[in-house]
Amino acid sequence: MKQIIEFITAELEEAFEKAGYDRTLAKVTLSNRPDLCEFQCNGAMAGAKAYRKAPFLIAEDVVKHLKESSCLAEAEAVKPGFINLKLDREFTADFLNRMAADERLGLEEAKEPQMIIVDYGGPNVAKPLHVGHLRAAIIGESVKRLCRKMGHKVLGDVHLGDWGYQMGLIITELKKRNPELSYFDEAYEGEYPEEAPFTISELEEIYPAASAYAKEHEDYREEALHATWMLQKGHRGYAALWKHIVRISVADIKKNYERLNVDFDLWKGESDAQKYIPNMIQGFQEKGQAYLDEGALVIDVKEETDTKEIPPCLIQKSDGASLYGTTDLATLIQREEDYRPDKIIYVVDKRQEMHFIQVFRAAKKTGIVRKETELKFLGFGTMNGKDGKPFKTREGGVMRLENLIAEINAEMYQKMSESRIVDAKEAGNTSQMIGLSAIKYGDLSNQAAKDYVFDVDRFTSFEGNTGPYILYTIVRMKSILNKYQGQGGTLSGLLCTGACSDSEKALMLEACKYNAVMEAAFAEIAPHKICAYIYDLANAFNRFYHETKILTEDAGEKQKSYIALLVVTRAILESCIDVLGFDAPERM
Image 1 (cartoon, helix red, strand yellow):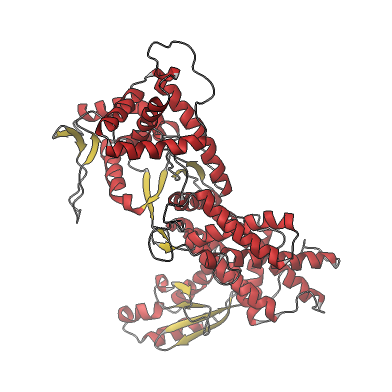
Image 2 (cartoon, helix red, strand yellow; image 1 turned 90 degrees about the vertical axis):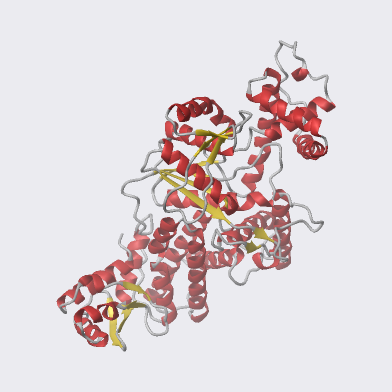
């Protein structure tokens, strides 16, 4: 289904052409002065020089050919040469009715669906998820859902950090504490236990203890590095321990992501890419794509157009150890082999941008990925506290993700209990839904690349630009529709008619923007555009609600039109929050 602005543009193009001007001048935009008009065309200003004519006269010529427009109620030439436009109310209502009749609400599905991989999450096993993992999970999940909404084939990959120095540290610390375990007996040839010799709580204590000790004791650090090397070389006992670590960690990680309504199609880790590394490095050397620099193997990725220094991509250290860049390139080989993606979107801290510039260029230069494969870096900013510094606990430590979620849920539960609208049991479930909206909307309403302040009080408010406000608006609509049905009305077969008030038309116009907003959000990979849209849509609905007697309207046809408008508006809001990764309760 065409966007509403495309219908207007088509009529303006024809009018410009009939008036004797280039139809490409007929670019239509939303008005930045909604008090004067709804849409605007500045083509007359752009064409003045080429036609050696005052822009106002050009605008007047064009407006004359818009008098019989099928979609415009008003078209006015305004000095110095603007064309101000207002939509016809019947056309607007008809457009909404066609949206409502379409299960995709008029959103066109991709004609040539792409295979897209979204790489987000990136937690390290054996470490608890903390607030630093929040943005990757929330933004990545919404990007994945947005790509799917547009009709593409999408795989979300958690990309676990499960293969590196932290594994050597854990193994070394376990050996120090429990040297009698069979995993450390070089002569042991039997089967290793199915149960791990530690719990998730013990594991989460072991890693930081080992890490801190290694910083103070060089011999311990060397032992951990050697353990890492032995694991990567296939040491039987260490490999068995590694499987325990990954299994227990992933089970805990999944629970935390479930609380955020985040899920992954692929639970791949750095370890999955290891088998590709030897042949990859050999290939780089044989083809002359990599060279030795002070004993380390590197790929030169600088380009003539660079305005800043781009260091070589480091592939292998002088001691033969692999690095993040090595693993990322090997992962691209794996993804190309298994899925042949058209696009890979990396949702990562923006401070890693240089790393990914190097990896992307190395991947293209060496032919690891096809030339047409798009590698997209979506860098996000820092989540800060009210002091402007990275978000911490009250004691100054890094807050665990589950504790942050619990704190938000407790805040919402307190508010729900005070409202006394729902019983205690329902308040628990509802508070979790609203709490999730507070966390996700609070994050996603900001442009991803920008730092933002995580303000619990503001994010949990039912007023202002917040998730709870959006949900409250949806619940208000549900309540009206339920009462309408309780009065004997039906929600099927209803049609919007021409708006009877300015607030009704304003709501209709906002609802009509849905497919344009979604397409723009996808094109720019910008979930914050969806947040901005539903906030405007919620505001438009609430103005309409306060000015209109919906359930007590005497004129039956007028009331049916109101209800039809509510039905499609609710559907749009629910579609948008689904992309953002949260749901609305029935009551609140």
